[in-house]
Image 1 (tube, rainbow, N blue to C red):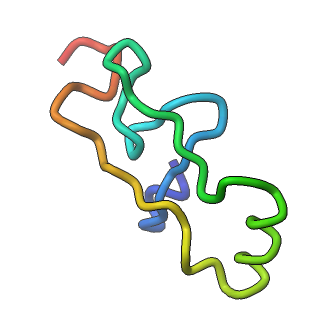
Image 2 (image 1 turned 180 degrees about the vertical axis):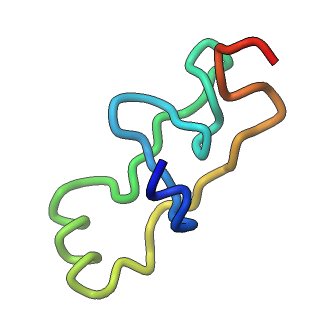
Length: 67
C-alpha cells in the first residue's frame, strides 16, 4: 500500500499483483523486475532504470471482493 501511495510499481512477490494483471484465475502474470539475482544487483547498483515493464491491471477486476 505504501509503495503504491508513493507512485511505485508493484512487481510480483508471491504471485500476480494489480500492476501485473490482477488475479491468478484471470491468467495474470507473475513479473519480477529482473530475470535473475546477478542482473538485479548490477542494475540496482546502476540506478535501477531498466526494470521489466509492467502491463497494468488489465480489463478484469484485480480483487476478489465484490464491487
